[in-house]
Image (cartoon, rainbow, N blue to C red):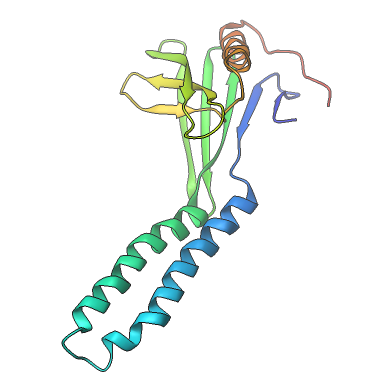
Length: 170
């Protein structure tokens, strides 16, 4: 179960980055880098009049493949921890330190339900926390607006309650 109320009475909503997606992004990025370099290095060395053109193509492949592989290695998984008067959003990255953003009842913030338009197929919906400084924090995407509104209501009720919630049984 992705959303649950723990023994401590806090509501937790996980926003994972699946391992399969990480592996795919790293493999795709490395594939672009390795294949382009392997196939085009003969145009660069030995140096000739076409070398700058082939070097430009290789650097272009690195500029695309590098960020794709980096996204796979470093994509942030997150968890929203909501309790009475407090929302903590933790973002964990495999090779960087844990980042936390904490919002209290006196912070100027709002929760919105936002449509994520898809190029093909149905759009998805997400709950977005908009901080006073303009930063946006998204929950995972849900299939319907009603599901996103239920999640927003659950977050709001856990945030506005005066005492910890009762744990859910898995």
